[in-house]
Length: 376
Image (cartoon, rainbow, N blue to C red; front, side, top):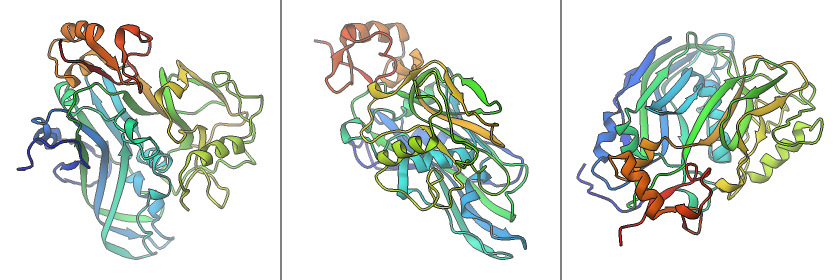
């Protein structure tokens, strides 16, 4: 690339090769497009983009809605040895994008009935650097390229068995982009995951096992839009995990969400003007949210006090305990035992005051970013 070993900057885009889009496929993305960053000191991913470009035709029954574009990614799975980073449907990850980006999240334009858009493009963003975080904490959840590659990074995209309602054809190419930043100083950042859990019961426990950035009740359908989560159906929630008052109305949860957004988009599934909400924020990420403020949950108890929505899922954005080998590779170590020894002796927790690891809560060390001071 001829760029050299950059200092912290706005980042450089890595781009996978293109894969022809077709229904009912498993696309195993070749991650060698990230090899160009392996010579950097501390390359980290600020966000991933999943891109479809080509042409779309709508049927005679109505428009092919841009709101449904993300359903071209039936499931996105990003994993490595010791941990799964993403396992969720495109429609669910679109709601995550809305949650993180607010009015900066956009959908492709609708395609007119019986019309073709010959230059159709849709981009689904998965951020690990959050616009709502203060600058000194934007790095906290960026994954390490070196650690993920060392642990056998795999990116798999599953396409749907059928197109969404009114989508007649979709022909084109799927690509993955990674915005990579050189952080210079090696550290093991928080291990953020985006996982979905099926919601099939009125009341259930969901195995979060982490510190929750946000959690959302939504749905994944192959038809148009999302299941309508209206107040007429869902008007009283209970959660023993979160200590809510009995029969909490989702309007209160939406208000917490609204307060945490810089600006609200017209396509925001949490606050659609029509009231046919596509999502309910069970836990909302607030402005300037820090790791120590996130609810620590083994299991999330949720009682909907109504039948589970059609195609219902819970999206959990949670910081989990880092795999030991991931921490070691991120900090430049090949020997996990040596890393553990140095971490205890010279490690710092990046909690805003660089607390020595030896003085920090041992149950939280694996959730906060950590760095090892130079010897001497």
